[in-house]
Image 1 (cartoon, rainbow, N blue to C red):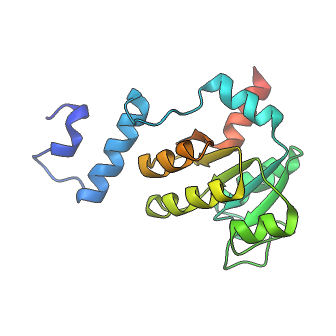
Image 2 (image 1 turned 180 degrees about the vertical axis):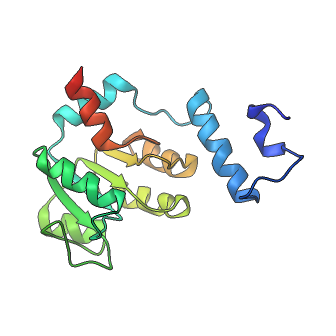
Length: 178
């Protein structure tokens, strides 16, 4: 079996999901965890400071479906007192809040946001990083399961703090327990 660090060049039995995109996705997750992604990401203390100083969070990919993770996170953060701004071109309202088709439309209508929290496929993340930079957000946050070095570089070079592969609600609960 090849070493975990050599996943890009792995050979042998084919896992159920295969292909260059899957290997790159797994490799980026491993690189993030090993500190080799090439993009600085906030550590626990930085996340604590960010969440304690944040008031407004835009959720890109917010879903009106109660069973979706984005819905539960949006609902939980709203209940915790954050001003939430759902963004999804396919929805008019999410958890009783007006939903906007783009981040730019949300910021134009409601004002700036501190965190842009993304619940979209990995390939959509670089475009959302550009939107977050243009919107003047403080942080570009990719939810649990999402890692994109390209999106991270865009956000970091645009002056934003970066968080990847972490859930805003889980992190808030962790901070509250400590």
